[in-house]
Each structure stands twice: as structure tokens, then as C-alpha cells.
Image (cartoon, rainbow, N blue to C red):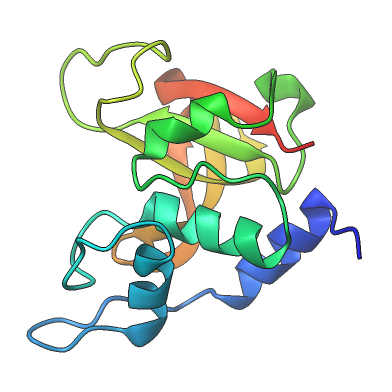
Length: 151
């Protein structure tokens, strides 16, 4: 079966409200996402945005980065402009304060999720590890590193 980016987006929406569990208990769903591509995470209180996108893409048989670094998605699929973005495309943004390197550096802080829309100078992203949960959040478009369409 061929899954479209719209299928991936619809599936990702079904995970809304899945969240980290504080303390010594871990959410088994998040641990499954993390362990799909890495063995080192021993708890769910680590960056897991890329694990979420990889997990959804795995379930939909889409290309994946197979990496827990958000910026690893800058090498997957085809680069498109923000104006071309549609629900289900992958959005990669800078994370952190101060001056951050551009998209040519994949080993730097970042965040990744599914494009969910645009409002003024904000990008809406459906992603994991957004305030420790899966949800849609808004980020300044000035933090954009790239938009990727999975082919």
C-alpha cells in the first residue's frame, strides 16, 4: 500500500497528547519511538522529536533519517520552500538561544515535525517533544532551516 504525506499527517495527529511521564516511569510508546533507531535512551526525558517523525514515517513506509538528531532530516526527501509546504511535509527549525549554524550543519540543536500550517510569521508544527507531548505548536518562521517533502 502507498501511503501519502497526508496519511502520515493523519496518523501523527492520532498520537496527539502522548506525553512523557515524569519521575522514574517512562511512557512505553515514546520509548518504542526512541528505540526504533537508537539503543542508548534509557528514559523518555530526552529529545525525541526526531524519534516521533521517524516512527510515523516507519509506520507509513516513508523514507526516514534513522537518526535522533532533528537536523538529520535535512538530508531526507526533497527540499522545498515554505510557500510550497503542505500538511505532512517535514519542517526543521533551529533550537536554542543565540546564533545557531545554518542548515549545512546537521550536528547542532534543532527541532523537527510535520508542517501543520502557517499564521503570519509563525510556522505551525505537529511534533513530538513539544512541551514534552505530541501537539501542534507555533514557531517563528525566522528559525526555519528547511522543509522536506518525502518522495
